[in-house]
Length: 187
Length: 221
Image 1: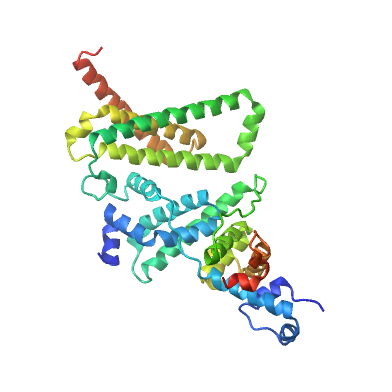
Image 2: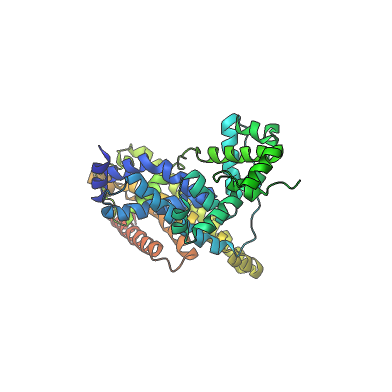
């Protein structure tokens, strides 16, 4: 079944079509909301909320953009909105400082896990800008639009976030290659 | 010699260096190496893979979509769990649900008596806003999972099956109501949770009446 047909069937409430769309796009949606959430527990809620919103809004999808782009934007907006609410609640709590405790793996997988763990440790504003720019490929104008900040603020946050990531990754863990940045990145 | 700041180096990942920065990078091996590492870090971030959501997430989503009327639930709608399972499997599931319900009930009873006995504990609990919301999320998930399992028991192809196994349905509803009560206790004003709880309680009453009627006809009481 092609994508347009699936979307049409999903609009009509066909559970199989909804499941097919979910299976096709869930990893992409989950990846972006997980990185914005910075936490597994929150990510599940954010992902579900994103899908609910998307299915509710499905009848408004006109096909001007690719479905994946449309869905991705809903997921980002939904996760950012949920993150703002979560941040408001979190202010009442002391921040939890967690070291990236990761099971031993090697090479590229290790590096990616460390990157993900370091992302989780970034302050929320920096993390969101870094994910949207460096991971998702948004422009600073796009970021300004979704986060409600200026492009200049987005740039400034991005530079701070990259520097903070570098700091978090420097000497983390027991891999001596991480001490020598360029060798570690090349594994 | 003063090195370039981390923010400047981060900016130079994408932007062209000024003449001054370029002169520095030409003469400072450390800054040039640091810039290279930052470029590689950025490249790798752009190649981070997608992530598979945790197992069971679709079932929770599907249950919520069904509750909101966004998908049609019923026979032939393609719900993977609507595939007929043997009666013994459903009974085992019902028992497991019942036990899980009893266990979670015990946990929450213990939790609520702790708050009654200890004002300090209650204050700590109330001030721990994020914890409370996490509890709501957990309770809501338990509710959704119970809803999915309840549908497993109730959406059978033969009407006589669902009508003929009210004890299993009642056990599933028991857990559903308990999970719903916990969720509503945590978020009393949530219309979604309240609606679900009311529906589950009404359904449980109906199943109970059916069981009582059958029992009376059989002369059990």
